[in-house]
Length: 219
Ligand SMILES: Cc1cc2nc3c(=O)[nH]c(=O)nc-3n(C[C@H](O)[C@H](O)[C@H](O)COP(=O)(O)OP(=O)(O)OC[C@H]3O[C@@H](n4cnc5c(N)ncnc54)[C@H](O)[C@@H]3O)c2cc1C
Image (cartoon, rainbow, N blue to C red; front, top):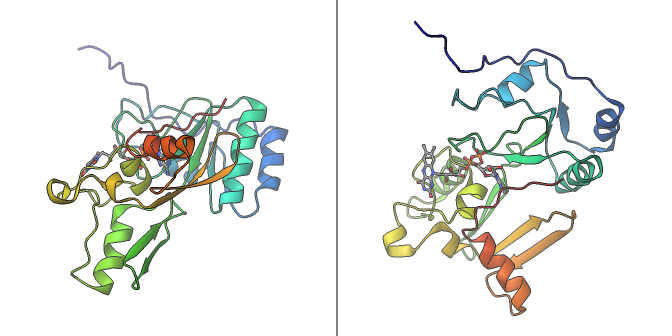
């Protein structure tokens, strides 16, 4: 018999609660900071793929507002921490975690709104497709959207990767149906980009978001 090379899933060693993290915690208006050693930490870092399960971010911020996301990005830039976003946890290679950096968990930002006047759907960055499907199904069974075949895939990351739907042959990729995106950029600025941009730079940014498969990293 050979010994397994898999790292054990150890999530119970408390990391040093340094002063910097405490200051970040105080700066966040409504979001929660999760430290290693807690059940919330073990739950939030569980990704199902044992190959990558052993990645241990130094802290997790469970974001509940855009200003808190801006604050967290500024903290990572100022203190040199890698920043990784997490929403639907469907990346097989565990891209929603990192080792020794900060994870920004977007799962609480899962609001979805449907405007019946124009059938435009507004979806927050941490929503899953099931959040969207259940809202639309509750309104009108004829409403459909170019979403993921798996209901627990994150909407934001699906669209950033293009997004292949069961309806794509007729209606294109998920990203072909996006009208507007609000993005928190690396410097912390909030940028709203639409599919009607005239300025070439903004047009290119929107194009890059439609399939560029962005993985947010701030150092
Ligand atoms: C069972 C299964 C079914 C799938 N079905 C489909 C399908 O039908 N069609 C299809 O096109 N793809 C499908 N995929 C692929 C899926 O769209 C991608 O793996 C997607 O990146 C998963 O996103 P997530 O938020 O669920 O995962 P996560 O692991 O949470 O995130 C994936 C990556 O996106 C980043 N990220 C997360 N949220 C955001 C955000 N709001 N803004 C910026 N970056 C973010 C993370 O940092 C990470 O790098 C499927 C995958 C699985 C495992």
